[in-house]
Image (cartoon, rainbow, N blue to C red; front, side, top):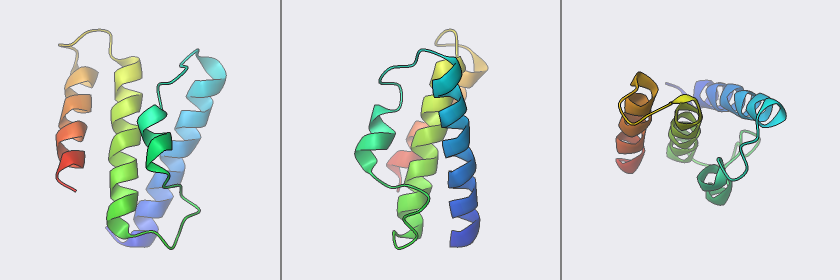
Length: 87
């Protein structure tokens, strides 16, 4: 993916995050993403920084919707966590 495409995907994930925060009580669910400090409007950040932010957001969103450790979304969260660790 090109950097511009990653930034667009990052923007989409942030919009999903904001909708989740409006509709659900998820205090602290996005703490790791917020600690990273890479946001879609930070176009000067590296491609890898945006990739990492996307993986973290995806992982955190999947965790919110997974109901147990063996659910498919829980498995997706684990896979995203492994992918994030490689960056």
